[in-house]
Amino acid sequence: MRHTIIIGGGASGMACAVFLARKGHSVTVLERGERLGRKLSATGNGQGNVTNVHMGAEHYFSDDPEKVARALGRFGCEETVRFLESMGGIFLPDARGRVYPAGRQASAVTDLFRRELLRLGVEVRLGAAVTELSHGPNGFSLLAGGERCTADAVVLAAGGMAAPNFGTDGSAYELARGFGHTITPCRPALVQLRCDPSAVRGLKGIRVDAGLRVLRQGKLLFEGRGDVLFTESGLSGDAVFRASSYAQAGDLIEIDLLPDVRAERLKEALGKGTLLCIVNNGLARALEKKAPRGQLASLLKRFPVGVTGTLGYRYAQVTRGGIPLAETDESLMSRLQRGLFFTGEILNTDGECGGYNLQWAFTSAHLAAEGVEQCF
Ligand SMILES: Cc1cc2nc3c(=O)[nH]c(=O)nc-3n(C[C@H](O)[C@H](O)[C@H](O)COP(=O)(O)OP(=O)(O)OC[C@H]3O[C@@H](n4cnc5c(N)ncnc54)[C@H](O)[C@@H]3O)c2cc1C
Image (tube, rainbow, N blue to C red; front, side, top):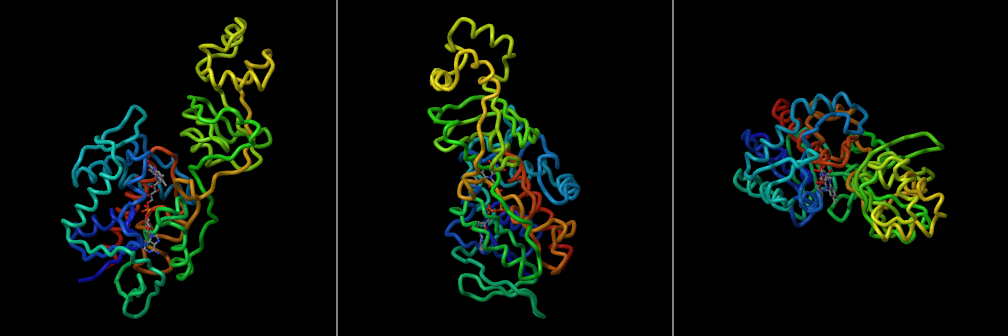
């Protein structure tokens, strides 16, 4: 029987192994860490936001958005929920369309995968970092944890560079480079922004539902609304993660701290001489130190924060950049090496915050599994 090796036992690697094993394929998962799915277990603040009912290519950044759209058309949110529930569990959307397991525990999603892999008899080798990958007359040859192994097809599901504490330091890009693949320049995405310290001084720990605009030399690059959390070094929260896909050092962020209150109404309320019951008291104290009373209204509607950078890969949820989709076919098989597939974050496709990245992991895993079947 033809044998497939999957490099990386994260979200996309485990999903691909399940898809293949269910079709009767012989599969081995090689995972460098001592446990499967460590990153998956940490997703969604530990609650596991696995997909989103508002699915579409417009939520992704990629070199080939049309390919992403076709891929999501073949395996989108509904298919993901059906797939996950085929292993067990109940998955439900919240009011914003973000889908979570009903038990709200990301590690339980990983456990579902582990259980299914065991049931299907998939071989899993832990502590097996793949350091060499080549192809010869007898198929693929790999060096994993110091041991040589062979395969007829290989799925490179080794993730990107975000959150290296979960085993993803970008070293797997080298395995792809060995076949002539290029790597679209990478940067951390869905990450806290580092900001001008004087702008955020005294605000640490304050969380607001705010409107947020990213401006570069006066040009609007992003506008969104959601959670904004002031941190020691800058800004965090849902809206900031989304903005981090656009913002870079030198940009200006304007925060509307009262997005539901029109400027005229605010001015009228401020005429009573107090910020009480307008904003959180901690925020009020900090704002009063920053601006004279006459400027408070405009400060509340357009609170300016200069961006100095991001907190980097260590704190990022995902990697922007990677292996271009243009270097793969419709099933994400390498155009440079038959039998070599890519899934998940290692590809130059990343999504917004809200379940889009795990959706890509599952979508790409499904495509690659179909491709492996056709390639044999
Ligand atoms: C804190 C956090 C929260 C997140 N929350 C969400 C969320 O709620 N919703 C969402 O959609 N996305 C979320 N993401 C993003 C999402 O987790 C990733 O996009 C997704 O896990 C990528 O799947 P993957 O299979 O490509 O890679 P990973 O899940 O990163 O798995 C890659 C695996 O490959 C292994 N590996 C690497 N190199 C080698 C090698 N050479 N040999 C063998 N094994 C190797 C790694 O150890 C790792 O286990 C979050 C990310 C983080 C860090």
